[in-house]
Image 1 (cartoon, rainbow, N blue to C red):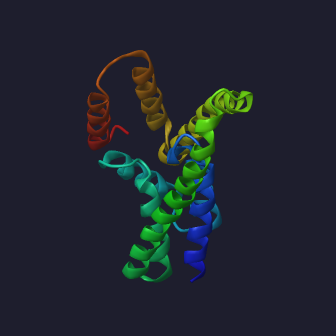
Image 2 (image 1 turned 90 degrees about the vertical axis):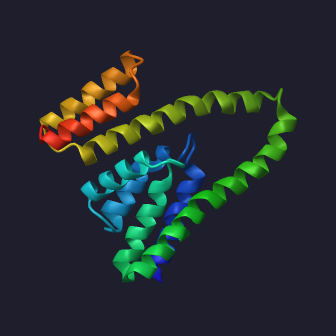
Length: 181
């Protein structure tokens, strides 16, 4: 039962901090799931993140996968399913409730100086959170200089060109298949 409470507290609190989307809180999610609760290793977390990003649907699918892993380690497949569902609900419900409530007042304050200040402040905050996510995921996934080099090259291609990302993903997968990375 304590694992389910830990899942609810972790994802309920992260839900309220996920400004810019669920990926913005991945560093803290990693810190707690790997370092504090020991539900998985850093490599397993990176694998779950990769899998969750390649599947169709919301990018926050990793939450259900972490909840499943936590429940699985606590008592088997049924606990895993309960953990996954609980994690997903706890990640969505608090933020959705807060957004709904704030939106009721936000619409009425279109010309407010406070609203404009908050909107200007959230943009750099969101960018910082996403950059922190990139760093944490790179450290978790990259294990030697070749992987770091491939990460840097892919980042350059994404930033400097309009090349279709599927081509870059396919090339990186092929290099992994060949054992280059």
